[in-house]
Image (cartoon, rainbow, N blue to C red; front, side, top):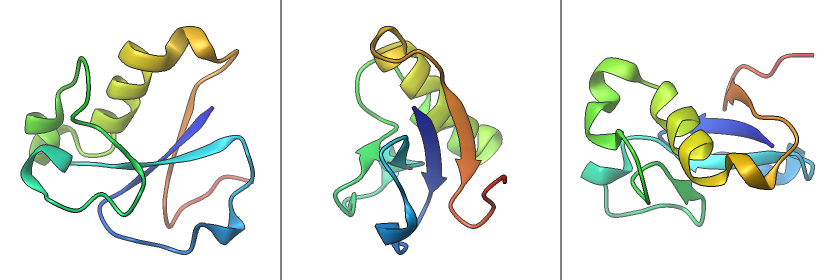
Length: 81
């Protein structure tokens, strides 16, 4: 799984199955755009102002790491090729 950290809605049609969008700073937001949230389970979402995209990576690692062979992180506007 590669976490796509985002604070706003974006065009997910460019994503394939390995990318999973995560709403960062979700503890302070009502909308989730249908994405995973960084405030579910064991999380540090409240610390998003200091840790930014890492709150999504932390939530994915703590709550989903056993479900995937690998775990990565990209920003919704900055994909690595």
